[in-house]
Image 1 (cartoon, rainbow, N blue to C red):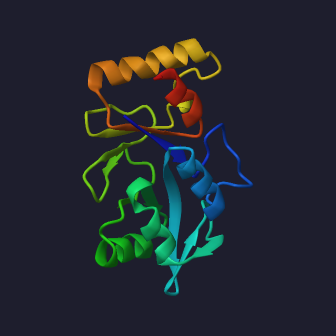
Image 2 (cartoon, rainbow, N blue to C red):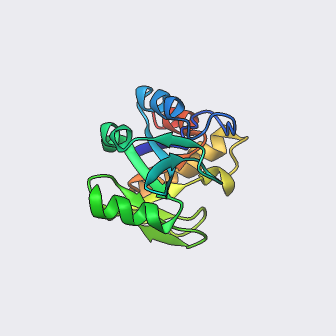
Amino acid sequence: MIFIAHRGNTNGPNKEEENKPEYLLKAINNGFYIETDLWFINDELFLGHDKPQYKIEIQFLLEIKSRLFCHCKNIDALYYIIKYHPEIECFFHDMDECVLTSKNHIWNYPGSKLTKRSICVMPERYLEISNKITFGSNMKKYNDEINIFGVCSDYVTIIRNMFG
């Protein structure tokens, strides 16, 4: 199973830092994959959740592509990545139960049914994370019964530690 830092978060939400390039690199350097929010506006790339905040060059994404999942926040970002940089795994969704990434992984909305190709997104939204034993046993149950591909969370350090 792979462990994906949601917007670079590894130990809980951090609105001030998430999606910043250096924050994403820190998560990668700690052994995680990352999910980041990508915008393409006026022929420029930006990272940021609710709006384009951090201008980046495509080289940044290409250098981390082996540990990257791009959540395209506008259709132009999705088109740009798929057309010009298909080596970067990306997806686009809003409130769908699940979506297929450009590399055929199933990006599951929190609480939706999981499969062997699934990335379990934000399990803390529907599993009790304050009780680490319950949370860990529920995550292990998902992996033991289904053998999911990965998990994306703001709490990936806790989750990874539970899997030893």
